[in-house]
Every structure is written in structure tokens, then in C-alpha cells.
Image 1 (tube, one colour):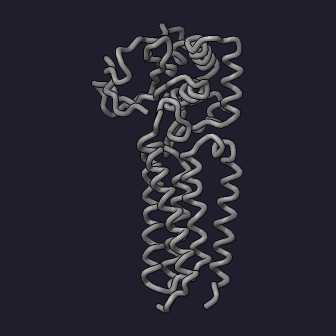
Image 2 (cartoon, rainbow, N blue to C red; image 1 turned 45 degrees about the vertical axis):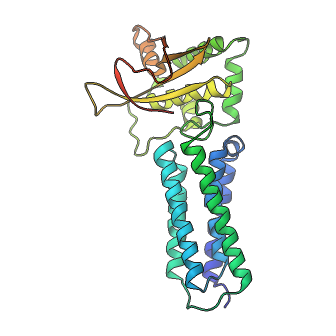
Image 3 (cartoon, rainbow, N blue to C red; image 1 turned 180 degrees about the horizontal axis):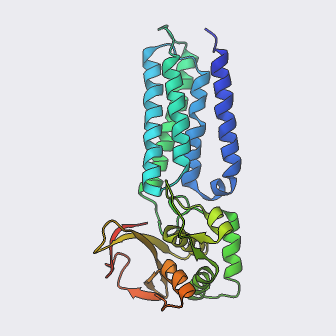
Length: 294
């Protein structure tokens, strides 16, 4: 039985979508192994559309693999607050529904079909394991590019420019800190349905909230190979509120720094938070209950 015209059209649409997405993300894909893995997890499943799976067993394999792919993207979205998984999940769910509704009668499959299905399924499963290890267990989260803190080549060029003339990590950190607090404004009108860090938008608008400023500070520091964490927390007396700041490493010590607080303090003529030395990376904060360090 030949592959239907509608399936070929749907395949062409999904491949075009993934090509456009790849062009948009090309700078990030070069730098981020995590993002590359999740991009491939959206680019490979459309090839199932070109394989006519007539047996119940092969269709079950395809359905299970697609569902695992959807779950992997959901995990990426929850852990790293990225918008990409939402876009790919919609595509994957649509593909899964299309395959279910267009299921054919049971017939014995040819050997080539079985090999194709198992090959694509294996590649997707390997990518899921690979992506899981980067999302959940990055080797050096304080230096990684591809989780919640994602930057591109232009960000690296900017960091090099900001740190021109700096010889030590402390000088680089101070240069990045001063550049942010003097060049950005807090966006009091920001109302996000899905909160995620968009380095291009933040640098273009020179506006943002604590989540944007902290991830930008981390991106600029990490691109200079300076260890830097992003920290989420809630005030001890207001659990409904939330805040994000940084912990950065230089001079053999970890330091707390709140670029958002100091950005607004500069604008309002108030005292700066500055840098506060910590005993260790996971040290407690006197004002906030720490919910996540990444």
C-alpha cells in the first residue's frame, strides 16, 4: 500500500517547520548540546510519516516513542523554563494524533519497514537519554549553556567587549555587573504567561525582570568561563512572592550578587546590595528561602 498524499503533505509541513526553527536557532544549536538534542527530538519523528507501519506491534513502538518524546520535552520545559519544548510538543502531539487516526488495517510488514521503524525509534530513545542527562545532571551547571540560561555567539562577543582590558575573573565580574546595573531598566509592566529567558529580547530591549537579569548575568559570566549559578527563592514572610539572583565564583570564593536589586537601586538612588561572600555554594540566605539553584 502506498503512502497517502495527505501524509506526504503533512511530512513536508513538519519538515519545513523544523528547518525554519533550525535556522532561527542556529547560533544556539552550535553552542548548546541540550538544545541540539531537543531540536533533533522534534526533527526525527516526522520520518515516521514516511514509514507505512501496518502491524499493531510496529505502530505501538511508534506511539510509545512519540509519547516518551513528548514527556522529555515536558520535562525540559518544567526544569529549564524554555519555550521551545512547548512548540515541539504541539507538533509531536499533532503527529501522534495523525498517526493514530490514519492507522491502516493489519498486514504483515516487510523487513525494510521494520528496520526503518526500529532505527528511527532507537535514535529518538538515545537522544531522550542524552537530553535527560543534560537537563537533570549537567556536568558543570554553573558553566553550561542550554538549560534555563541560554545564550548565542552574539552574547559571547558582547561579553568579550564588556570585559576588554580585564585581567582577572573579579575584574570581569565587576565589569559585567556594572554594565547591567547601569544599562537596564526593570520592566514593571511585564506579565508573562510562560516565563523563560530570551537573551536576544533582553539585550534588544534593555528591559526585564529579576529572572531575565539574573540569567543574563549568568550567561555573560559563563561565556567568560566564570562559574555562576542562578538562584530562585521566596521571601520567608511571603511565600507567594518570588525572586531570582546569582551566586558567582572568583578569588577562590562564592559571592551572592543581586543585579536586579542594584539595577532598581541605581535608578532610585538607594544603597546597593553589592557582593556578599558566602561560606559555600548552598549557603542559606537570610531573606529568602532558596527553592532552586541552577
